[in-house]
Image 1: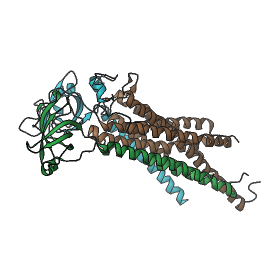
Image 2: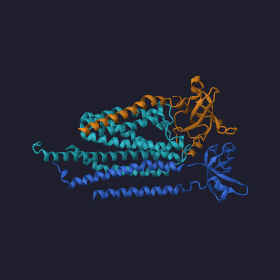
Image 3: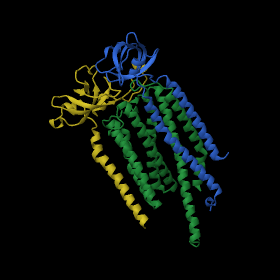
Image 4: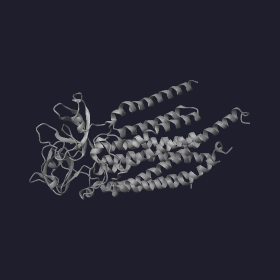
Length: 242
Length: 152
Length: 164
């Protein structure tokens, strides 16, 4: 069966992905905390950028994977892809919540506000709501086929929010600053760009590692449920199988 | 059977909550947030309906305009978007990043005496990051023009 | 090696590295922490080079900090400290700004002679953000990896998982 081959492949590489994530994050933490200069406006508080921005990038990456996986599921109806979508939604929700939390901690000493309803913050909060709604929907439907289909449709509809999050700071007036890395160029000095890039890479790898692990976890649970069901049905209705 | 019904009700409630939250954000709140703040030029053109109404104004604090040497507590400064400049009276403690030549979003109200009164300021910083040594050496990184980022 | 023990071993290595980094960071920034507040300086008159944190009192700034000399009152909760600054050009000095002044207390003149002015570093926010950002992620990843390993172990021994 192909799925067993896929799982064996994932198992072979997941150690490298996890190890790579640990190395990038540790190097990024070292540069971010010790090896980079304070900012000319913000001083030491700028170091929060090296944790907040990678978390936020990864949250958006996660939702992109979720939307892509949902299209793939609706097209191929592969239950493992559905497992992957369920796994990625939980992980993205986690990254989205943590990006929000670290952003609030950055906002207080710089803007002097933990939270404000500008377009960037509001659209990002909507992203978290969509993910929580997605996860809630999945627990509410009993029929696994229906659950997968409805969830995929919700995920694809919710994708509208992603460009809004990304371009909100360019399209509208916000308290949040515009993109630092855009078509205008890179507006971060090299000593501060290095920890940011390393942490971003590390977070993306960590996200991939978590996705591999969680997809296996959900797959194993589904396998366990199915086998249990089959064993039980063998006990109760021995003729039903044959 | 009973369990099924409970689940269905739970599902309906959760969908209603999420849809309601999304709808509220999409229709009411988010619409307002597209004009998160007014610019000084818009404020100077305010019709009397807006006088005394709580609004936010974003702009740049004019160099050399911050004064704290008056008798009454607080401070005054000018806020500009490059076209119009408004005088602001502020009572309270400004954010740590509040500075002449930096962006600020000021919450308060405009009066018929053509002065903005505020008790809450948020600092708006730009998207460029560099060490102080580079800044002192006169390095400028590519970034969006601050005044343009106000008007949009 | 037993996969679960391998997992614990790998996580111990990561934990040791993170703790080393945390210790290094704490060591590096220990000297940057302000030691005194204004009322302590006037009351205890500490000798030598010290760091004092407080807020610049409104309407007290004289001189020109951009030219490298200024005088102002640094407010604490109970008392304010007269500060005379002589040093490199400084553009962070304004009323209501929370600052750290570095220098020595001149008891005979009753002023604090500052040779350097810094903004308050807010290390609490930085530490909080890193903790809030990383700790839940680490716990989640660890719990998930452990659970998957346990399930695979279970699968090998239990008849429930045998291929049909």
